[in-house]
Structure formats: C-alpha cells, structure tokens
Amino acid sequence: MIMKGTVQEDYEVMNKYLNKALELGSVPALNMKGNIYYYGKTVDGSKDLELARKCYEEAASQGYAYAYNNLALMALDENDEESAIKYYKRSADLGEAWSANRLGEYYRKNNDLKTAYYYYLESIKGPYFEKYFWGYYNLSKYYYLDGVKELNIKKDLAKAKEFAAIALEHGIEEAQEILDIIEKSI
Image 1 (cartoon, rainbow, N blue to C red):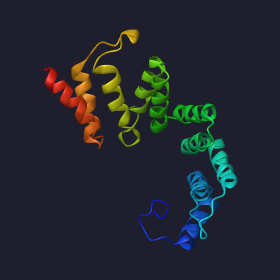
Image 2 (cartoon, rainbow, N blue to C red):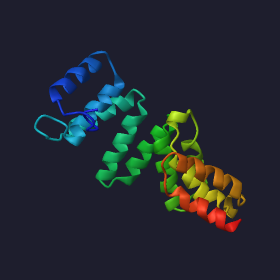
Image 3 (cartoon, rainbow, N blue to C red):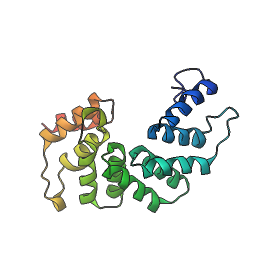
C-alpha cells in the first residue's frame, strides 16, 4: 500500500513487514524489494538498479512471473527489446496474462498476426482475477471486427461485440468505439 501511495509513507513500517516476509521466504516480497530499489521508495528516495535487478532475478529464478515482467520493463528502459521479449515470454509461459497481452501487441505491431492472436488468447485465459481485459479489446478490434483472412478468421460481429462489451465492463473505455461501429453496421 505504501508502494502504491494508498497510505502514508512510513518506510520503517514497510521495511519491518517486508523483512519479516523475506525471512519467511516470500518470493513476492523479494520482487517487492526489487520494486523498492527500482522506484526509489527508500528513506532517502535513492534508486539502486543493480540491487533491483538482483532481487528480480532471484525471484524469477524461483518461477515468479511478475519478476520476469519487471526484468522486461528494466530491459525496455535500457532499450533492449530483445531481452524484454524474452522475459515477457517467460512470464507468459507461467500464465501471466498482462505479459501475454504485451507480447500480442509486440507481434501485432511487427505484422506477425498469428503469434499476436495466440498471445491475445492467452491473455484472456485463466481465472477471472488473472485475466487481462485488454486482450478482449484487442481480439475484438483486430480480429473479430473485420476478420483476418491470413488466419482464416471470419468477421464475427457477435464475438466482436461480446468481447468489446467485456472489455468495456472492465474499464476499457476504448471498447465503446467498437460497440458504436458494430451498432452502426447493423
């Protein structure tokens, strides 16, 4: 909560509980420690990117998908897109929906629609709380609204509408544009 700014910053309390979680072997706490170093949520506001990387790498080595996401973000900050994609793939392979959608976007922008489609579908799989609802928007907009001949995906306005409605229901306001287009075409 301190990291997200929803409560007053009290680094002593934050570190007390974080260190206790680390003592108990919490991998998410190790990743959070990396976030503290990466974003400079320290008493003096200083960042330590090497310590952040070390924490993320350790958490990732224990199979923590979100640590791979953080390593990908660090790689992007360093203009190392190749490493970022590698880390996003590892995260997506662990079932993390946000990274799957990021990969979908990457492949779509690089005209690999088949791989993009695969990752968009991956981003909407899994339990409700783990789905990434931008995946619904992207599938609706880029695949079902007009179809994709190269992938033998036919135009499916019912599916486009269903997916856009799901996206809109979960706060993706851009989905309203798709719903408006469908409404006008009926």
